[in-house]
Each structure stands twice: as structure tokens, then as C-alpha cells.
Image 1 (cartoon, rainbow over the protein chains, first blue to last red):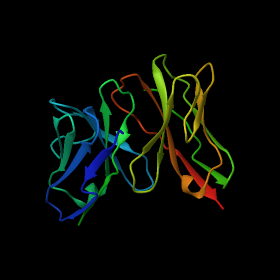
Image 2: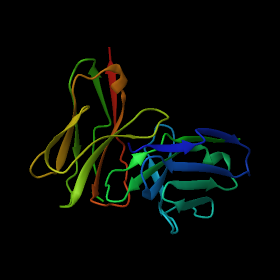
Image 3: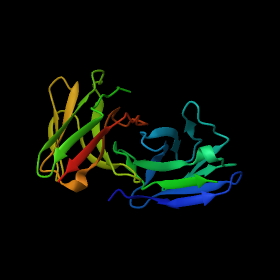
Image 4: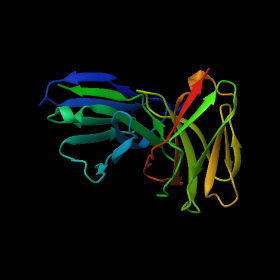
Length: 115
Length: 110
């Protein structure tokens, strides 16, 4: 149980385009989902927290207009990187937490390369 | 959120027991301790979670002393596939977010 998937697993795009990453909880309802970014050899950095049906809460320094997060259902959250630039190239990881469950389960990650 | 401190790296050999200690001096009464494992280019994988004393599952044990200011993840008889980064995190019951520290990079050699 407690499986979280992400799609796509990797994406290459041109600078200036937008990229959408999906995060799904496959066998539980996720009232809260989180988005992280991880650069090579570094730890995970929390970008934002999203609760189903409400606006995401972004961490300091994360541009909400650049990283659009939607959590429209209890099993799906999406992260859209708008007008992507090479410096947005990174490994994006989502996690999900169900109701009454203190454990976060992570997706496999999405590798984004912006050319 | 309680800050955690772990060794940056550890080396071990196949078949040995590995103990990774995490310090969390500012842990609060309602905080739980959770350990994750991460392989390169993968999302973190939940290993174990505990509140006090000892917790054991099929892959690891978690030892938490009475003052709860530290915890030790114990991996019995490691194999090469246990080479990974291990993160210790502390958070309140129902906490909203996790803050990852640097983690401990474990290298298991033949």
C-alpha cells in the first residue's frame, strides 16, 4: 500500500515552454501533497504544500507564479513549471500524506532538463 | 520543526550491522522520528518511524532513548544494495511539512 506515482519520469523541454508534472496517490486518498526539488548531490528542498481543494502554500523563495500547483482531487496534484529556463533543470519529487496518517510517501521523481 | 544532525557519510562492509545516529536536541513532546532511504534518481523510501523506546520492522530497528534527543537507525547485515542516503526527520503528529537535512551517505563495500 501507500504508493505514489509521478508522470512523466523524465522530460526534456526547450527554454520558455511550460511543463506539467503529475503526482498521484494510487491506493489512498491524499489530503495533503508536497512538492520538493533536489539538485545533484544535495538534499530535498520543500517547494510547496498543497491541500485538496485549496491554494498551495509556498516556501520562502519559491515563485508561486512560476511553479503552479493544483490539487483538484484527493488523488492528484500537478506541478506546472511555467516558462522553464535551464536553471529550473532539477529532480522534482512529490509526496503524499493521507488523512490521519503521519507518514509521507514519496513518488519516484521527475527529472526535468531544460535546454 | 526540530533540527536534526547526522554524520555526513559512513562506510561499511557487506554483512555488518550499521548504526546511524541522529541528534535532535530540540525535539518536542508531540514529535515523531522518521527515517527515509534514498537511492540516486529516486524518491525517498519510508524505512521506519517511532516515538520512543524501540521500533522494529522487517528492514530496520529504531532505538530512541528516554530523553528522545537522539535516535539510532540500525540496519542488520547490510548488503551492497543498502548503499544510499539515509535521512532522519522529526515532526509533529499531523505535521504539515518535512524539512530534510543533509542525510547520511552510506557506502557498503564488498
